[in-house]
Length: 240
Ligand SMILES: C[S@@+](CC[C@H](N)C(=O)[O-])C[C@H]1O[C@@H](n2cnc3c(N)ncnc32)[C@H](O)[C@@H]1O
Image (cartoon, rainbow, N blue to C red; front, side):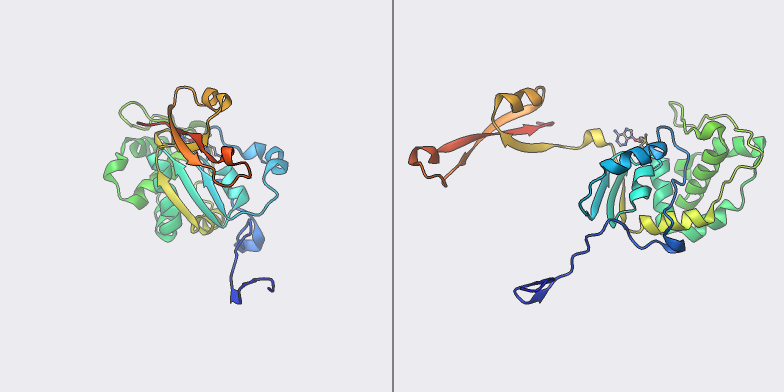
């Protein structure tokens, strides 16, 4: 068997950590300012990232995506429960030109800022909604994103002299990396988990509070006949 062939059939394995990035391979930066972003931790994470090559990257708490953009994986599943953030990423991925054009209209003054805050994003088309989101993120105080109980954006005007609302080059790189991502609006805590593990006191203690059911596996392959009987296995679920 030669490398790259199984039983004479060629196969292609695209196991590589990064895609070929445009603009001299510069990695995109997080396109939004986001509380709790991991950007400043990347250099400490670096030695802890897997050395093995991998294709799929799954990020259940995307936020500003500092880790995701740093890794720039070949394939990704990206999840966040913030609808504005997720709409923004989807528009950057699928409709960047329209977004860049729309972003031109924004003004950096208090009156305009509060008129943008007052808009109801649910009544906007996806592009204007993403454009509003980025504008408010870059011009609001400290890059905070905060909504009140009624879902109204309530961050004060940041009074920045010259905020960089549009970084076209970075948004193009962000868009390119996002082409390979499935972007999902979802609540990670509502994910249904089912796993099966050996039925031991340790596992039972580890999953205390979860639904535990015993199932039986037959361990037929054993040199001792008496050890070929059923073996109990624990199914752990976070739902019933
Ligand atoms: C600190 S940010 C994540 C930082 C990011 N991973 C990075 O690399 O910079 C946390 C994100 O988790 C999201 N989030 C919080 N609870 C969540 C949940 N239950 N399901 C999905 N996303 C959630 C928030 O909307 C926020 O965008």
